[in-house]
Length: 82
Image 1 (cartoon, rainbow, N blue to C red):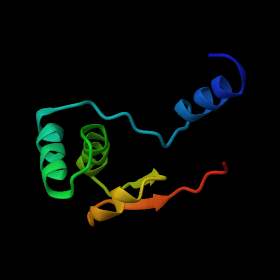
Image 2 (image 1 turned 120 degrees about the vertical axis):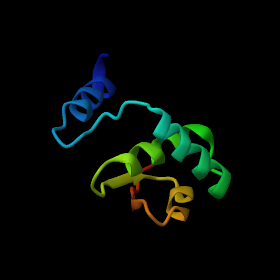
Image 3 (image 1 turned 120 degrees about the horizontal axis):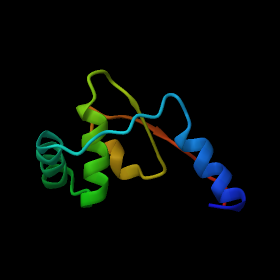
Image 4 (image 1 turned 180 degrees about the vertical axis):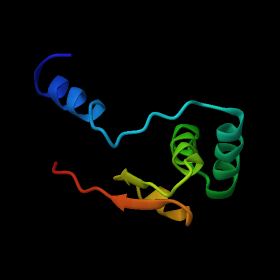
């Protein structure tokens, strides 16, 4: 990638605290429950399920209020400039 977006992308994915979570049957089951219970779209439910599958509690950064419906998820609302 080139330009400002490429720099942001590279910085984001080189962050030490970033965790990449492999998709597993357990995560799919959690995502299915989240989707059925809270009505999140499938990609959003998968993201939440990945975060919840980690052994300790992790901060979930998002602009989307829908994630705050999931009480077990530690959501931090990110404000962006438009």
